Image (cartoon, rainbow, N blue to C red; front, side):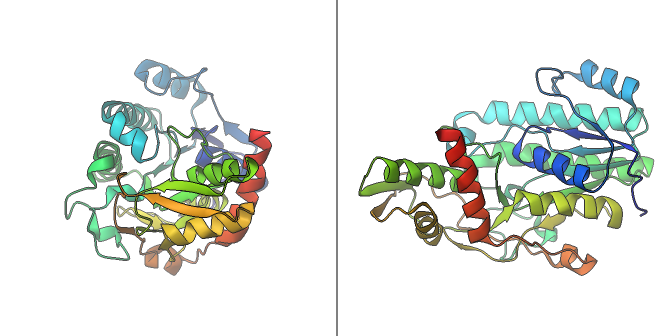
Length: 312
């Protein structure tokens, strides 16, 4: 692969989301001068003809496909149809338009939930499609697996250097903090902050607290995306993570320390835990020369400052 021309037009699909906004910030910082972005109100990526019209008119050189319908356990369990349908349509429309209108490089962002519920730990890329998925987010996972397969098919049939990236659990400024749909870390941050502000002495998190999770700051993922666009050209999806995980009970205590909450932390075991452990094997990306930079406490502190600015 060769270095991307900093004057080349790059479409960042989903630029207002957690990942897309970080990608835009990083590309701008790296000197890219022609970033193509459209809000969901300006362009519905589920609308096939609208996507084709954009690519026909703008002819992007490269694409980072970060747009997706995402959510935590509750949202995935409540709306599996939307998570499957919306994500399939977004991926199909962008990937088909990219091929039709000559996009030279493309990176599709997947998710670590594509791997089997009981995959070996840490999870290698080769674990894909080797066992049953976690039932609470199988619809979303299947849509993402379809996207990976689509990218692989484009490589095989048309020789296009398109790639797929599988990040671990993400967090950072710009995260979704809606308690109905957010992921575990922002949910913990918001719940703990609200308990602290009201002077409460008890708070309750979902599940048992025993699952282990790995967390990657979204700025680190943004760096990985550009790195892989310039350094990697392979059919195999690439895991991106820190290589370290912790129990959710440990995460809850760390969040409490950052927030300043000193009360009791309870767990509601009637709520689902999800996958018991989800640590990615990052041997491949590490062998290419990429490493994360942001420590978990540092990242949570930064995210908490951002969160409080949104809740005041």
